[in-house]
Amino acid sequence: MPLPRFDRLAPEARAAILAVAREHFARDGRDGASFNRIIADAGISKTSAYHYFDGKEDLFGAVAGDVAARTVAVLGAWPEAATADELWKRLTEGSARLRAHLRNHPGDRAVLAAADRPAGAEDPWITAMVANGVRIGLIDPAPGIAFVTAATAAVIGVADGLALDRPGDDVTPALRLLLERLWNAGR
Image (cartoon, rainbow, N blue to C red; front, side):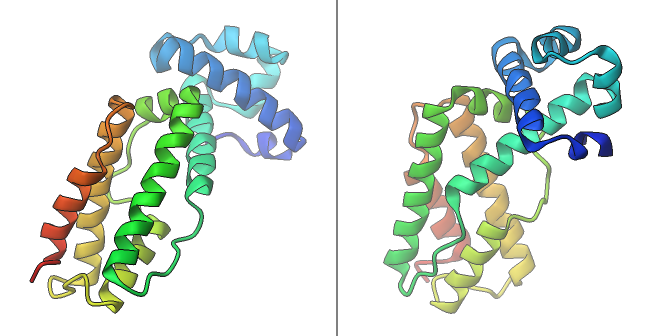
């Protein structure tokens, strides 16, 4: 994560630095991007760069965090569903919004594909979706809500990984099938 001085920069300056870095990481890859070229193209000195970041990996983490936050914003809050059909529709719509965003922002897709995917990270959208599914009787909570939520997040994480690796593929049908089985939706 960037050093505290980075957060004190004007939002426009932060966004400009991250945009240049995102372009480099997307084009050259996480390993191939040059920290020195990024900061030169961003118009900041090496001294300033090290006031903001511990190095290239720290800068990549900031870029990945920014891309993830913008991508999550595309999803928005989980919209409550009253029926199982509505829940599946909302999940499909969210998946379509993410695919469209990544198709229209290939730099974001490239950065997310190169980013470490944290295991067990709590996702408010998934947590809300599972809670909604339990409330409407779609999801069997018997294994425990925390376990079902973590397993759901893992399945969605695998689907997200496949979608990042193969942006032309629609993984939504396979995702639904796996979630139906995981949730014991057909009881």
